[in-house]
Length: 63
Image (cartoon, rainbow, N blue to C red; front, side, top):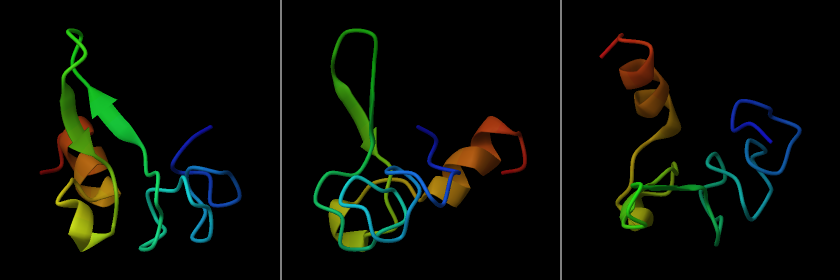
């Protein structure tokens, strides 16, 4: 269930639900508590979202 699991649906480079698949059609999305979409987590530049590495850097205080 983690985007850090390279063998799972959300972290694989092949899954259509993965943050790390540049061609994924359904990458993970982050929502605010009011249901508003905050960001798409993807390496695909067409989504104009947040790169998963940047997301973890922000969460861990490294960026």
